[in-house]
Length: 290
Image (tube, rainbow, N blue to C red; front, side, top):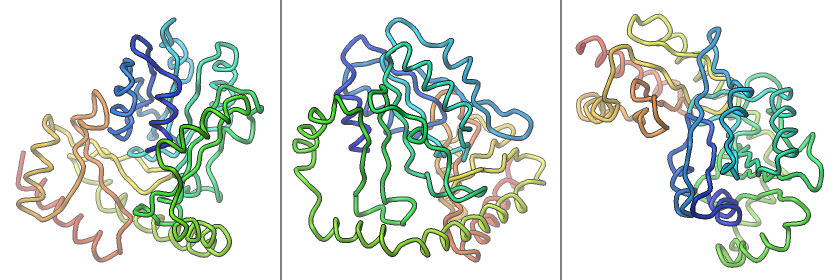
């Protein structure tokens, strides 16, 4: 999140607009709003049983005040993964209009087709208006270590080096050593986690996919599902009641952007037994409520 906040504060000011692909992690919106800029969301669609981003529509939503476009792929919470063709189209547009493209690729290694998700870095030029942020939190299960990196245009490197000194001074040496160990020796762990999450995804789809009140799309990456509960209009109240009555925690959909109050986010980064027990509680709760 620090890298996202740095990119926003270096690029936005009051009166600017940031176009954010939703659903999105709520702190993204807050990191942008700190600058005084306006956040405008552009929602992914459900199309042919998958989450889908209409890049043409996203481009059409750009105004003369748009200074930044934020996209997170693989996506928290939907599990959507951007295609190389979509990335090329969006980057070409941002290049032509000199709009900063902020690509959050923190779930880059956690995909279920292939080893990595498509990355903007594979098609970027040194001077593109592109910032790519990534980290150790997700792929190596190092969330509490708060260690990550950002790739910035060559002509803005000095600016971000100064900002990094102000924001963090520097990562503690033992954390840096942990990051080095992850890069050098952590590949077996990445593969193990990916297979664990794949099994969790299949369990979620198997248990929830046939329920009459649940519409769930198969995640392509990350470790979340973002099902829609038919008839649900207050996801916060639902989440609160669920944890009180069934001891099952989910994230309410409303917090991931406008139009998602009928959704909940659940994580399948759990053991089979714990995830199965949580799904039991969720289904039991749905079956006894309207």
